[in-house]
Length: 346
Ligand code: F1P
Image (cartoon, rainbow, N blue to C red; front, side, top):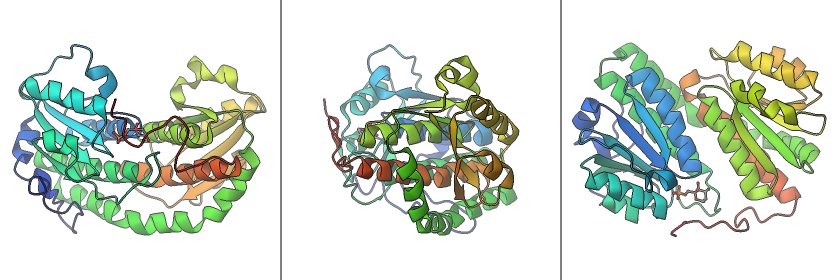
């Protein structure tokens, strides 16, 4: 199995290796459709991939909860590529869904953290995320590792399909290579995140909003808070706020808005204005030096500037830390939340 998943995932200056996918990459490049399945956090990583692959590689992508996919009668063609994402590699729904897709002749790829896990063994090829052992039940570094692999896959696919040129490809690789250093600066700022967490630790509900690549980050931020602190939190595409969640906004509701210097920026600003007009509290994840949002938000988590295509990798980290500190302050066991299992094998 380690042979199938061989090779490194780290890009060098001008190419992405993804060793475990080398042999099947021509098939991925020729795919008419990619279906990505997973549960929980892994499903959120899949959503980031959908946006990246469709934008840059122009291949249609479907993302589905494995827990739904396995039971309905999805249409699967022989030329389809199915990517199963799982931290543990043991999630029963994901395993059953991929076996079903395999029986229909699709090429099955895996992105798993645990080497030799059940899901990895069932796949035709794949990439191990090598994110070390996750002690906590709630996925955190697994998410950033999955998004890293999926981003590299999307960029390489775009290049192989001639949707982007070498110069743009190398720029994206450069953005990926810069991520570790940028993450360090976010981690250095964690005492400040703790101070903000103190303010909101008694919240009953929280709303998380984001657009584009940062919509899945909003979902993931909300999931982390609910998994480990038991605060009811909902993630929404910010454009959906006016279709329902806006009814919840009052001076008791923390609204976490994930933003970047991207094409959605002005729309996000107007979402914040809508919340402020209803006296909601805004906690904004912003690009360093964004003085406009600094004036509007009640609290601010700054992340270093990046290309929007990689912004999910940076913006999720303050939200993971925010959830962590709130959970600790509420006396919750962050590593072993109630009712949750590391591997959901039933
Ligand atoms: C999926 C998942 C995790 C979540 C928790 C329960 O696991 O929903 O995202 O944090 O651990 O299981 P996996 O298939 O990625 O191992």
